[in-house]
Structure formats: C-alpha cells, structure tokens
Length: 257
Length: 226
Ligand SMILES: Nc1ncnc2c1ncn2[C@@H]1O[C@H](COP(=O)(O)OP(=O)(O)OP(=O)(O)O)[C@@H](O)[C@H]1O
Ligand SMILES: [Mg+2]
Image (cartoon, rainbow over all chains, first blue to last red; front, top):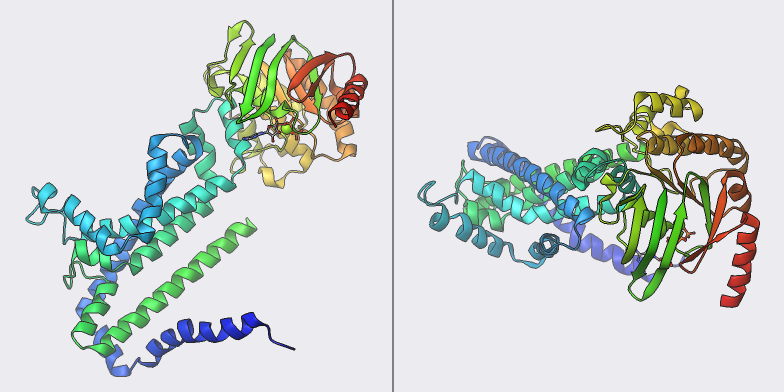
C-alpha cells in the first residue's frame, strides 16, 4: 500500500522529536545513579514536597474552579466573569518566571513581611501558591466545559422548582460534575508536578524544604551529578504515566456509569 | 388565571415574539406552531427563565414579570425530561416540596395517577422514555404550581406509548385545576389533550377554534410567507 504524506512526515518527526528524547533519558539510567539517588534523603524529601504541594495546589484549584463554574453558568455578563475568563487565558502565554515574580511581589517581604523575614516567599506555602497560579486555568476550563456539556433545562427546571442560582448549582450541577471536577483536579495536579520556573522564583530551591522534583533535577545537573538527575527524571516520567493511566481509568468508569 | 400582555422578545435584530397577549383560565391550552415560531421562548418568559423586552405576565392577579423563576410557582416540563440524574425518582418528584409548596398527599396522588409507585426507588437512567416523561411531569406537579407549562413533553415518545400517556396526562393536569399551556407539533396529540387552542406564527399568537383549523392556518400562512 502506498504511504500517504502524513505517515511519511508525522511518523519520523514524532519518533525523532518525542520518542527519542524519552528513550535517551531512559537509556542513560545506570545502576550506580539509581542507587545513589534512592539513598539521597533530599531526593525523597523533594518527592514528598512535590506530591504534597501539588495535591494541595490541585485541591485549591478545584475549589476555585467550582466557583468559576458558577459564574460561567449564571453570570456570563458580570465584570467578575469577564475578568476571570480573561485571566484564565493569561498564564498560557506568560513566561512562568513572570508569574513567579508577580507572586514574589504580592506575597513577599513588602506585603507579607509580618509573617516572616521573606513574607510567604521561600516556604512550602509559596510552592503551593506558585503551582496553584499556573495550574488553576486548566481546572477552571475543565469545569467550564463540563458545565457547557450539561443539559441547560436541568438548571431551568430546578429554578422553577424553587432553587436560587446558587442552590441549583450546589444541588443539581455540582453533583453531576464528577467527571469534570476530577479531570480538573488531575490536570491541575499534573501541571503542578511539572512546574519549575514559578516554583523556583517564589518558593526557592532549598533542598529538603522547598525543593521539588523539577528543581532537584535542575540542581543535580548543575552539580554535575548527571546520573542522579537522570534517575530523578525517570521517576518523573513514571509518575506522569501513572497519572495519565489514572485519568484514562476514571474516564472509562464515567463512560460506563 | 394566567394573563400575558404585550410580551416582546428580540435576539439582536430577530424579533422572536411580537406583542404576544394571551389569557387563559383553568383549561389546557395547546399552542401549535412551526419550528422557530417562538413557542419555547414564550414558555421560558412565563417561567422567568428568560427576561422579556416588554410586556407583563400576571398569575392569579399578581404581576410576576419581575420575579425570578424560583418565586413564580410555575411547573415547567421541557422537551427532554431533564431529570436530576443523581437522584432517584422519589427525590426527583419531591424536589420542589419546600416552604409550604405542595404536600405529601398531593405527591401520593400524582405518583398514583402517573403510575410511578413501582419505580420510586429507581435512578432516572433505569427508566424507559415514557416513565421519564411521567417523572418529569410529576416533579413539576408535586409543588402545586399556579400554572403548568409543557414544551413538547412527549415529542421523544413512541406513538403507541403516547396513546396510553395522553389520557393520563390530561387527567392529572385537570386534577390540579390550574391554567396549562401545552406546546406540540402533533395535530392528533393536540386534539387529545387540549381544551382550547392557539396558533403561533412568526412570533404572533392568536386563539383558534380547533387544532385542525390551527394547522390549516399555519399551512396558509406558510405559503404566504414563502
Ligand atoms: N439564545 C438565542 N439566541 C438567538 N436566537 C435564539 C435564541 N434562542 C432562540 N432563538 C431563536 O428564536 C426563535 C424562536 O425560538 P423558539 O425556541 O422559541 O422556537 P419554537 O417555536 O420553540 O421552535 P421549536 O418548535 O423548534 O421548538 C428561533 O428562530 C430561534 O432560532
Ligand atoms: Mg421549542
């Protein structure tokens, strides 16, 4: 069979640009690097920090996104909605160093000096806030698209049966938003796991306290510990695959429900 | 008593309702009209789901034009049953019971009349189309609304089942003794359920003697428009 242009162009480019880098990383794994990394307490602390901060950030994202969903459904003409909607698109084009700097200026020494010498900056809270800032738009969009897929009449009927918009949102919208809330949460969680720039700018890269996997890899490369960086990176790939699998599994469940 | 006067609604340049006025008492008034003639828009304005550009909706002497849907006490049955999928049938039917609206007695009566007793513990997804429609109607009736609005409630239902459902629907709607607006495309359905008839063409409404005449009127006007 004659191959078409898409096969001829797509397959080699995909192999070269996507598969090859991942393979290169995995092929550079070696026993000694794995051994040393797994024995490094700072590695495990960065794993715990990453997962903990990303979970907290994703939770915060989901809660705020649920609020955004309400505005998306009932208040599309309000100023709040228009601003919120605009800001949802902002972080996509924004260099995340800029996001980090913005957070530093907002929650740093100048405004939050009463908390500590650096304000909220360079604490685990800062890591969570940085992850939140860059991940929230994904969660907000997931909820908004869930709301869009919902039958509008369901809300209309709830209103005629005596619900205010807020009551209808809590009683008949959110209960059927399971899939949207879950994908919003997982998307925000994945985005949070991968964040580097904003986290380092605002949270810092203090081994054991604010260092996350992304910054651990960076530090190990800087220190010339390439094998350790490779091990930590492979760990990240495994974590990502796990999340993708989780997302697929839940989608399956909802489809059958 | 439902009195609608001078209701207008535009979407941009498009005039969907032009000075619609209609008064009905305790009767089932069928509204017949082509796709896009503005029937659903009118029902949504009466329910308070959409705001009119002009005009009044008066329910039992009370002007409800400025009230949100939750304060109007209308029963709304949309084309697709729009059941609350996370709640069982019983919870769907009882959803609107609150603050003195409806009573256990009325719920029991409606459930019995619509033959829902055996499915009360089921989730909506387990119901057939006919039972979904019944549940949707029961849910709207249970809080004892002051007017009932039905927007092609049986258009998704097979004719054979419709034949059985229409007398049931008529009986339970009559039982409530409130004005009923019932939108349909189907001449036979219109004759079965209606006490009186209105025809809607291009956002204008007028009373008409029978369903047959309504369809004749539409045919004539469609030809003039075309
Ligand atoms: N949100 C909207 N924005 C713009 N135009 C709308 C909107 N909703 C309805 N319309 C238009 O208003 C007109 C009347 O719509 P409506 O749904 O009231 O008609 P209908 O008589 O119920 O038709 P059908 O028999 O198909 O249900 C249609 O031409 C429709 O395209
Ligand atoms: Mg319609």
